[in-house]
Length: 603
Image (cartoon, rainbow, N blue to C red; front, side, top):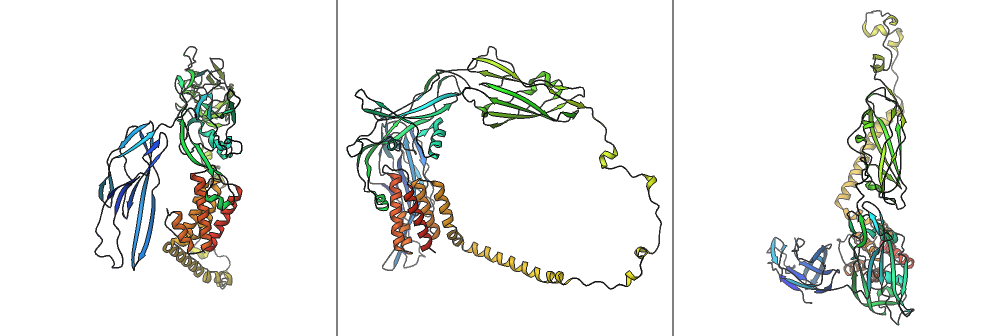
């Protein structure tokens, strides 16, 4: 598709060098595809060529469209011809445009800012086709419960049914369940309340359990992937499963691989040559959710739903009137389905008359600490009289969803000794008894000043001792050494500030290796680690592409540059196309060796 260009020309600076030719500046809108699928992003780029200062586009709102700003991309190229040097630079701002319904959408004209000047775009019309296809992809959320109480935990399971792709070139005639699961697009799929389960599976490098459904002829009809989770209804009525939408690239044809990965890994295989996006969203879970009844609700109920045990302890057991003591209240979840302890509230102690009659209780309730299926609350209270002998039992009320009734459990009564306040004496304040005047020694007044304290006249005539040699050397040598060390440290700091690229290159391999280990088998993350290493070792600007990095690396070593180019092509192919989505141990070893070679040739 021919891009829509809006050219903004500026005159060449009059003070420019005679052997330097300034390129024309231009700003244009680039949409390589104007037809897409619902739920899948279409990329539109806003490119600023040879513009010194640019701003990301502010996209106008269009009903049914969603914008996702992507990281800007920068590149530069220098050409020397007949003694004249021309440098061209580009900054591209990609925008992912997602439609939530099929149809034609027009993005109206809007302004772009370039070097303080304003350029208006032309209206851009995009067409989005429906991507749902029940014959290829179905999804639903099921539960073993038909009834639930508001505040209860509901077990749920996301079922993803995918029609197996069949092709005669495949060994079994159909795509395996493992490769079918890999068709799911992680970038556009929304997992909603099932996200934690999916993340756990990814960390374990695993996939959810899969089962099969056969048709009437006994042929394999569906792969069914079951993703379990729990839901917490926040309102009465049907359970909202949240923002769940499954998106995958369903194959239409496969062929023999021509991926550069084959050259790098020395192996052949099949790859998807044609595909189409397919999306599916589950309906609301058909469960009757009701709030806990008001009949029989105890006055101290704070919203707890489940089955619990309750215990209370207090420290210390002996206090003075007005001094604080700490109540430690422990709630243990014994429900059949684990309750949500993070939202569990503490008992309202300030509403318990038997407690506030004898103790000063704060109005605020503590937040509590969750550990497994236990939540602990701590609260300080103060006795107001010295005749208190016991802390009364503290009640904790909850609604049990299994029985459909309210229950109240009590902590044990706690024995307590309260002492009346006492007046502090001078001994208490000073920490020692006062001096007794009867034991005061008799003092005698003498004359003669300080000399009166000298009882031996020879002490006045004795020659002073000379200081030790070690101390003398320390006084003479240590200060110059400290000064020299400080001066050297200052010179190193100034040198690092004057040449920051030196430190950047020195830390390049360590930083890249750390990133390489953190991304695991993700090919996009591995490619970023290798790219970081080349950029930092050669002190290149961020955002340079593979071709530019290969050219720069070729100045150091041709073989290493070729290996880098082949490796990056392979990783890009694994990221953006083909059946494989992760690298294996053999390729990780080859990438590690490549990173070592790059560090060696760029010394």
